[in-house]
Length: 146
Image (cartoon, rainbow, N blue to C red; front, top):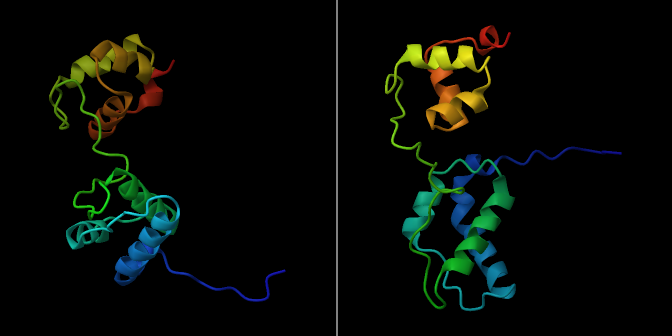
């Protein structure tokens, strides 16, 4: 069914097009219910150019529409955070291994038979934090699941 293929590079590979694409999506936002959207400042565009855009054009469009919704009418968007916002903090624990003892984690993994959810609940940290510590210390999770 495909007569020929067209390769379209990822957005991260054509960041020179970003200002044009942002203005295009800003115009779409104006037509879609945000007629007073003033656009996006050059500072924000520069910040957006440093993001990898894994969702390509769809993600960029959604971000421009989100800014159109959040920006006061008649003004340019002057602030932007990465999609998803900052990662949640883990109840006062640092992100570096060693903030609590390796032996404590091993004991909890043994008691919980390798259940990361149980260990994270007992230690009061996220499951992602437990997985990071397991990886940082080179522990093999399956060895506790018996």
